[in-house]
Image (cartoon, rainbow, N blue to C red):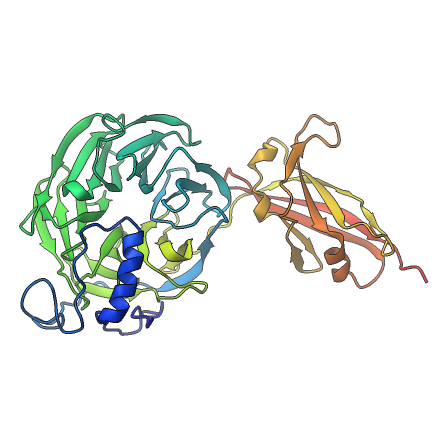
Length: 464
């Protein structure tokens, strides 16, 4: 399938609507997301289902005076249990929450990318948000409710009556200063507002194409600087703007593929310079517009290799100014630096490691070197095993993942340790001669910190 998204470097690009053959394939994927409902027939190039005219006809798109950002791909969030990220939210403590309907769970990562835990009491989680008090809100399509969890994933309650309160809670935004939780109910063509405790406040919107009306609303983002709500109307490509009390203010955008138009608008993010990042699931890219709807640039390229998007469904910014994008069909969250933002180095705390054996005999047939890892004043359970690395002679080795790590007190000092094992053969492959070597063991903690420990390993000379 041909990619219509531009390279990340924001080279000039004019997207086109896909042909009917490509559209049918993508429509199947979109239908599988359960994000879309009552989808329109996607037009072939030069046609539109929004009435007479061409997808590229009409006035020329307006270009924003706001410059395009400098975009740098920084990396990805991934985990074996994350299957299809649909929505992303960031907690005040830096944690990243990902709603994953394919995995029937929500995942929580540290700001450094360590996998902390998953929230399992869900069936088809579509949406998520985090309040100022670090409460996590998860919208579930199958249960038709929005459920509240604390920062550790423990259930606290629900918005309204819980199950059955909504028809399809597809996106959530929180005004952290006023304590209002906004839920996009796609099938009801409404936005409903609640207190952070779950009490209903008001709703606004109805089905239609007029001012303040939606054609299957999907994404929502709250702008705290201007105190505005932006809501994406999926089936007609419009972005509607409201006050915090639901008063309609303005609308921009249209259905299509030219700059300033959207084919399947989903989640949105807003940066401090007034650029709105709109995830277009059908065009497989993000389009950047200003708050008046004038085109700024594009971001992303379709593909399943590292750094590429496949059905982007949401975007948000973290506290460090990094842009996080949910790539549903690759099962990853992509991380971009915007205007020179970079991945912040997490704080480093000292750890302690014992290796068994700590002397290697090349003639031995033992398979493993076992590491017992302690981090003083931290729980052993807070160590993310898949982030642990053994560093030796400028090389890094990962631990064996075929065995579930265990927690115990190997040295009987009253401090719990995490037990991991490394391949003895891989370690010896890095060492050219007998001697004593300093190894460094590092990893990430669920507290958004990293640990580091140094330990010695000796290697005997090979028998002649």
